[in-house]
Length: 130
Length: 395
Image (tube, rainbow over all chains, first blue to last red; front, side, top):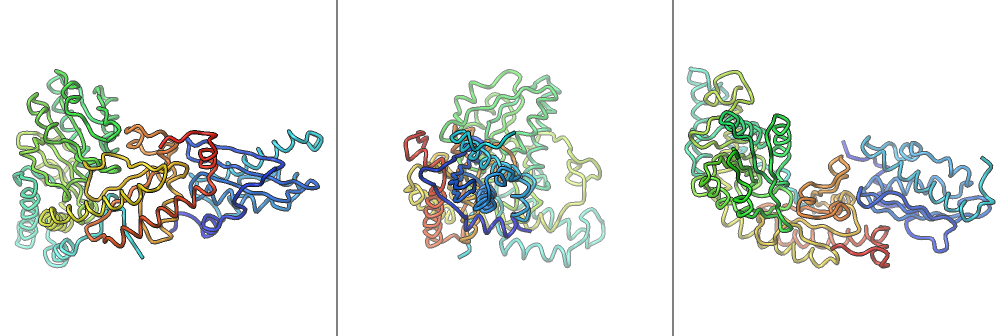
């Protein structure tokens, strides 16, 4: 049995939405180099939709694949949907991750949430009512 | 191209080992403890293997105990020395911070049982200083255990000098020679070794078998109780095919050792030069005092597991000290012991080439490591911060 699913390997080998968005509307960075994983997400938001998303990741294969899959799941979606992205959804979309790699999907969820928080900080009027 | 560059993890079995093993399974399958001829034939093969192994390291056959591998040999060596020490009120053990876990975890257990352990510094070059061993010795030291060559960074310790210091103080000296056996000349007499562990699958023998050398007069404590096999020091019917395969592999490795070492050292240095051209990369461990087949680098701004996956896609099997490859949160204790910080220890790569690795393969590895590191850095936020000056380079 392979370490990772074909889906994980596909997203690792051909990561989607890699790179940087200049003048992004929201930027989130989570993780730390000491633990071996850092994810950085850049969001472009138009009309309350994620019009573009890019990522940069320092990390293992599943961290790269999780970042890539997370960007795919939110690209073109309304911000409120993106806010609800869960690590479970990321892991499921990847056809599963080994147990000890689940934290990679958690990082992806946190990176997106952190980028959205950044967007709300800059645009408080957009923040939905609690 | 398929290149196996993880010979420190395990090796392909040699033809000689396989050929020696087959008759033990098909024809001479008897139990060495049985008195009839088919059993006695197995006994002869077993004892011939013992003599062969002993001859390679300058030991007497009676001083060789067959085990299930290096870990068992390490466990038994440490337990035995500790037991001897305890009986005479000596409960201090000296080792190093970058030993194999078979040693470190046994030491942890012994600490819980009341032993005190001093770990010697292995410095940035991955080498123990004999004068520091000298200084660490105490009246109540019962054992010094220092590996012959490190499994990750390949540094070769000054075993003969360390052994001489121990002998002068009447302290038992054990060495985990799992990585060195079959690759470096070892003479237990000249090297002043009392106890030594080895594992067959690191020198083209089968897995699940190894041996413990215990100098005559060093009593061993059993880990496995039962029958009277191995002169009562290790119960259980001997794995004759594996033992015979191990002896055949070791004999062959020893016979070709010098020629192999010369060739592999050249290739190793070619790899070190080539990979060393990558910016912000650093060799781990001393460049010269290392195993002929070991290359180990840290690369700044990338993580090791993703590097291994990319190399695997290109047919190269290698290893890393990254936390992600171990299932734990911490990177290799060996890299931390030589002073690499977590951030760069995660970005390590170990290549351990074999006797049959070619120059062409070495160049292919260099090219692919360069490309893979560059690619991973191209979307690494850590690398971006380093390049933009937001954080500073360590390597």
